[in-house]
Structures are given as C-alpha cells and as structure tokens.
Length: 523
Image 1 (cartoon, rainbow, N blue to C red):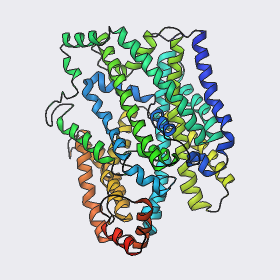
Image 2: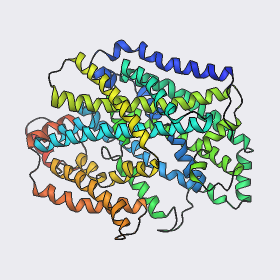
Image 3: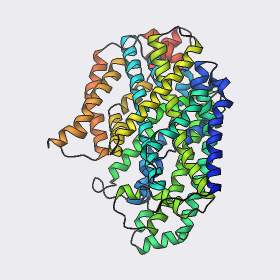
Image 4: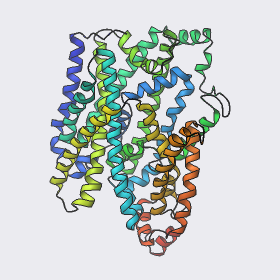
C-alpha cells in the first residue's frame, strides 16, 4: 500500500475533531477542578448512558482492530471467541458491579481496604496502587506505539510523532477537566468511532463484492470453515481446541462474579463509581459491553472481505493491518479524513482513560492515603494533574522500549492474571478469604507465571504450553499456596466484616457475617 494522500476536506474533518476534543477541557474545566471526586469520578452523578459510551470508547483502541484482524484473518470467526472474555462484564453488571458501587470506593485498591483490615489490607492497597499506576503506563505505551505504527505505515511519519504528539494533545483536556473531560470526550469519540467503524467496514465489504460474494469466494477457496465460529480443531490439538473454548467460557461467565478477574475491571470500576445510582452503574456496564460485541462482529465481516481480496498473507504483522487497509485503500476523499478522525477517536479515548485512571491510583491511594491524608481538595486536584503528566511521560518511555509487544501484552494482561483469577472471585463471594491469602496469591502468581511461561521452557523442564493450559496450571499451583495460608491465618475482624457486609451486601458464602449483622440489628 502506498502512503495515504489527504485533500483539504480530509484535513478539515481532522481539525474539527481535534479542536472539539481539546475544547472539552476548557468547557468542563470548572467542574473538574472542584474536588477529588469531580476530577476522578465526575462527582458520581452521571446517567448510565455516559459511562456506557465511555466503556465502549475506551475498549476501542488503535490496537483493537489489529488484534481482531489477526484473530479473524488467521482463524476465521472462531477467533472471535478470544474477545468473548469481555462477556464477564455482562455478568458483572448484575453482580459485582452492584457490590462495588455500594462500597463508594474510588478505586479497586481502596475497595481492598474496605473488604480487608489490618496490616494485610494496607500492604494490599499499596501494592495494588503501585501495580495499577505501572500497568496504566504500560498500556498507554502499548496503544501509543501501535498508533505510531499505523501513522508510519499510512503516512510515513516518524514513530516519535505518533508516540508523543497526539497523546500530549489528549493530556490537555485530561489535565484541565479530569474525568469530566474524559467521559464527555468519550461520548463524542464513541459516536465518531462507531460511525467510522461502520462506514469503513461496509465500504470494505462492498469492495469485496458484498456478503454473499464473500461467502461464495470463501467456499470456492475451500475456506468455508472460516465462517463457522465452532470450527474447533479437536479437544486439545491445533490452534483452536475445544479445551481453549471452554476456558474462554469459564473466564467470561464466572469472571463476572469477582472483581479484577481481568485488568479491564479497573477501567470499568471507575465508570461504575461515576454512575449516579447502582442501577445506572449496572446498565452502563451491560450496554457498553453489548456495543463492544457488536463492534467486533462488524469488524469480523470486513476482515473476511479483506481475506478474499488478499488471500495467502502469511506474516501476522501484515494481515493485522487488514481493517486499516480496507479504510485507507477503498474510502474516497472526504470520507478518508473522517476515517482518520475515527482512528484518532479510538486512540485518544483509551489514552484519556488510562491517564486519568492511573492518576487516580497515584493520587487517592498513594498520596492521599499514605503521604498527606489531610490534603485539601484543591491540592488533591493539583496532585492529580501532576501525576497525569508523570504517567504520560512514563508511557513515552514504555512505548519506546516496546518491539515484540504482543507477547508481553498477553503475558501481562492474561497469564500474569491467571493465578489471581480465582482469588479475585473468592474475595467477593467468601467471607473467610482474608488479606494474607489474597496477598500471597499475587506473590505466588508473579513468581510462578515467570517460571511457567519463560524460565522452565527455556531450560527444557516443561514444554511451551498453550495459553489456556498456562491459565489452568497457574490457577492450580497458586491455589496450593494461598488456600493453606488463608486457613493458617486468622479470619478478618468480625467488626470489619460486618461493616463491609452491611454496606456492600455481597453474594455468596457470607453466612457467619450475615448472622452476626442480624444479631446486631443491622439488617
């Protein structure tokens, strides 16, 4: 593909979009500066459709169409099951979302101090806050380098421009208006992104001859299996075994019972607490997830269209650009600028979220909790702005070091969460699970994940395992460590548990705490 050439109308589209996004910062500056709650949660007063649009916009980033393109071009519609893990949000919307919203915690780290008590709780909150700040910088670096590569591929621009310039523009409205700027910009960006995705995808599908022609060509190429989402390759063999599919279902359906069973939960948690009621919080998570699944389906059809036009591509890095190429190669002048504005939208929505989210952990859980508990609201807002800049600069450093990022991203967001997947459910549904059990599940998982994924295969101790087997192995090995520790250490203080239970009303195995709350006349 040659470099994309833009005409005046294209640049007008792009200019209007960027001006609109930066203008949000000025428009909502006075609301964002009022308090810590406004800067990080928009005062907890949003109707469900605003955080819902933010859920959708945030989870539509520059790397997402590359990921979906790789899955569908390489594996057909069955590859979409990789993205079905987000189905946990649909379950969470009616279970853990309600529990978390009732707690009134700003962050997941703060929720740990409400659920657990004592020294273990403080260690957990500090660890979780630091880890969250790091992971937000890591994800920002990943999406920024992906965006930079799209711009380099399309326009020949140097990597540093895509890595730094546009995220710095985005930081203007995040620093100015905080979460108010994020969520209001996300509403606009979600609309731009959705229409851009539909227009580019439909244009690409028609360039391939339309849906019927795509099906006919796939069958003629003996690739009809790509249309079957259940075309598995056996129980345990091949790239898409049934055991992998069952793992996806377990993660999607049971994961919604817990909190932080996927890193995405930290993003959802902020949207949950920004909703004005528990019901609004539930609706926002469910609706945002539904939009994500619809978006994936639209992308998938367009990518199948790209396959019939360009079959036989073997390099993953090349066919991961499938959806972008459909837009850049087939959209006419005028719409091309709107398509580029769409790409800016799906990038900046993710950047703004992780800048503000990472800053919330640095401000609320590190500075406010440990360093200056008596800080004024004005000072907390300024700390939020300063830490936003620090996270932005950190993302530049992270992005500049990333080359084979996909492997590291899967390790950080998938494998390194495997051992704490079940503890993240147990902390919600089981009263006896304590801070020490949860803390040691993290310690065990950090060590074992490196051993299972990297160290032991290198020395030939174990073979390189597929990701779904890594998940089950890590979950089992970590349980052997944290469950004995849970039973060998004391339960959480009953007074602390009763206070949390009355406030959050969790589901599951809380019988002794429920009876004690009733005895005290609190229920």
